[in-house]
Image (cartoon, rainbow, N blue to C red; front, side, top):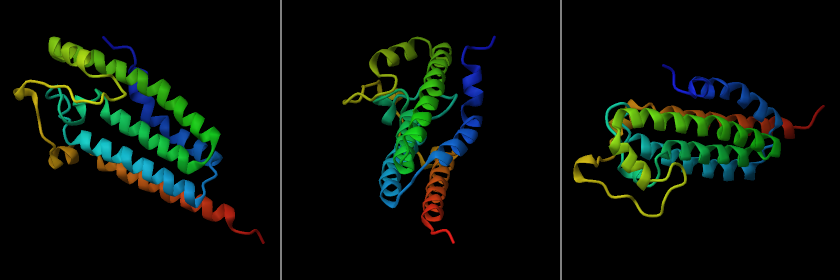
Length: 188
């Protein structure tokens, strides 16, 4: 049986590529917007990296590190990166398309993943979901029994291939610098 949201799980990244072309087309980057957007995006990358070092996909219910503040720190990091990209692009059209994509796809994906975690972890996940918000983080970490805690692992970060997000964001910034450079160049 297929869970609702399968389309969104499969297509969120695939549809991101044509979306990137469209938002870049409408972008109007400037040095200051690229710098500011890059700094915001680096915060999102940092959160994603931190979360990836804790996440043991399909193995255990991760409730420590950033997962003690929000059930979806990877997606919160992605949203922060998208905000950074929108700032760097300096375009309301680009920003609106990014927000729409994130809102439609990632909200559905988060809900689908919750159903999978409920099936896999049962009462433990229910308790976790009651204590920790879905997306926006709480100010204090939730406390869990000692046996369920974990520590950041750089090996786990690498296993989760999180460096791909960093590479992609750097590539985006490079493209925005190129767009700015070629659009400001005088025509002959």
